[in-house]
Image 1 (cartoon, rainbow, N blue to C red):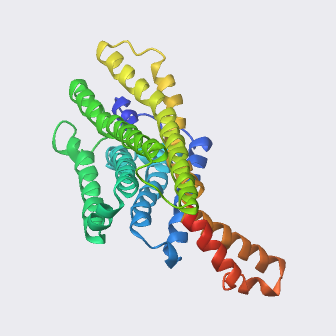
Image 2 (cartoon, one colour; image 1 turned 135 degrees about the vertical axis):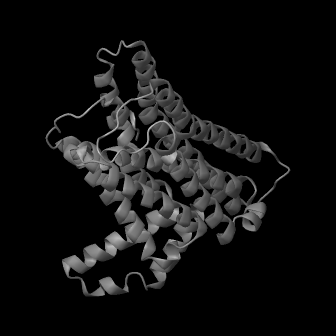
Length: 331
């Protein structure tokens, strides 16, 4: 996620051998994100505003695994090449900032969809969403290239290490505020508000509804709360150790008393870097429309592989269509 590794390097060194654990994480990150991205792309039923934001997030996850984790952590020799040794760490910074800005954006999107669906339909137009998503990409790119024009310019003759510890610390602290604290606060505040609204809807007789509609609302709100709790919990648990480790490490770096903190910081990278890997899986589990299509695709593929002649008629059958509509409406 971070340029802590690039900042830590203070001079040229022999590139270590391939690190299998990081290579596996990078490959899995690329595969999970690319698979879901292609699945949504080739299923027109999933083409909507929500999944447009998700596709942008999946593209970031794919780039992160392929263009940062693999060359930076999995095959370190690539990050010792001139120029690339300065660019690759900032690629990781920019992609992770963008990834977490998308987490923030998705939380806002769900907030307006659940809290104020009528205003959501007015504001969440394809044009507006495209502009917002584009702004997150531009902001992330800007954040990533700041060091190149300030305290750590690219040197085509050698890899640049730490030249200004104070500037590095200020920069990384700012990145972590944008990368971790803001998305976390937004997630907690957004879904905290959703919880309050859901509880008021369940106990307020001012909003009478039919029995069937009431059941659907209860199930939908319960699933939204479960999703919020799981996503926030995973995001928090995977990133908190790394954030604390980076903050402590750079404070220690300024005092010159690093000790074994580098190894502790490296260990905390594993859970943090696994978030982009498991995020597509969580999206499948908690997004009803995607889950329904994935299950249907799996059943159809299994029928084709097993040689059942009626496998091609599964999706077209009236029973399957009614079942899909029922599942989608309740999710």
